[in-house]
Length: 351
Image (cartoon, rainbow, N blue to C red; front, top):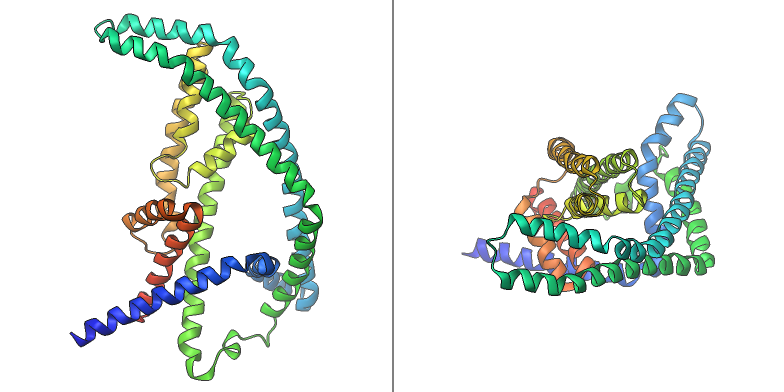
C-alpha cells in the first residue's frame, strides 16, 4: 500500500511540475522564441558540423559558420518561394471559386437527377429535403472557400507587416544558432557540467533520453508528412489540378490527423471532377492515387517510427481528442508531450 501511495505521489508531482513548466514555457515564448528555435537548429546541425570538422580538418567555429549559413540560406529561399506561390494560389482561389461553382451549378443538378434515376425507390421526402438543402450547401461551400482564401491572404499580409519583428527573430536565431552549434561541437563541451553534481547521472539520462526520443519521434513524422506532400504534389501536377501547392500542403497537414487523413482532399476533388466535368480519367486517377499514397504511408510509417517513442495508438488518439476538446492545438501539444515525457520517466524507472 505504501509503495502504491509513493507511486501515486510521484505521478502527481510529475503532472504538476510538467504543467508548470509547460505554462511557463508557452507564456514566455514571445521572449525566448529565437533561443528555442536556435537550440532546435543547433541540434539539427550538430552532426553535419561534426562531419565537416572531420572531413575538412577545420576548427568548429568555421564549420559551424558554414553549416549555419547554408542551413538558413536554404530555409529562407524555400520560405520565400513558398510564401509567394501560396499567396498567388490563394488569391486565384478566392477569385475563381464562386464563378466556378456558379458556372457548374447546372451540371451539379443534372448529376443529381441522373443519380435519382438509379434510386427511384428513395422516399420522395428525402429527395425533396436534399434538393432544398442543396442550394444552401453550395452557397456555404463557396463562402467557406472564399473565406479560407481571404483569411490566408490576410494572414500573409499581416505577416509582411511584422517584417521588423520577423527580421529581428531571424537575426537573433541565426547568431544564437551559430554559437549553440559551435559550443555543441566543441571538444570541451559536456552537458553534465551544467548539472548539479548529486543529480548529474539521473538528469543527464533524462536529457539524453528526451533528446533522443522526442527528436526521433518528431523527425519520423516530419519525414512521413514530407513524403505525403511530395507524393500529393506530384499527383496533382500530373492531373493538372489547380491550386496544387495549397491542396498538397493541406493534405500534408491533414495526414497528421487521425481518421480524417488525406481523404479530406482527394475524395471531394474526385467527386468534383466526376460531377462537374465528367472527367472519369482524373476522377479514377485521384481515387487510385489516394489508395496508393495511403498504402505507402501504412507501409513506411511502422518502419520510420520504429526507432521513436513506443506510444500506444490509443494513447495518441486520447491525447488528440482530449487536447482538442480542452484547448484546441495548444491542448493537443500539452497532452501529446505529457504522454511522451511520462513514457520517458517510466522507462527510466522514475515513475
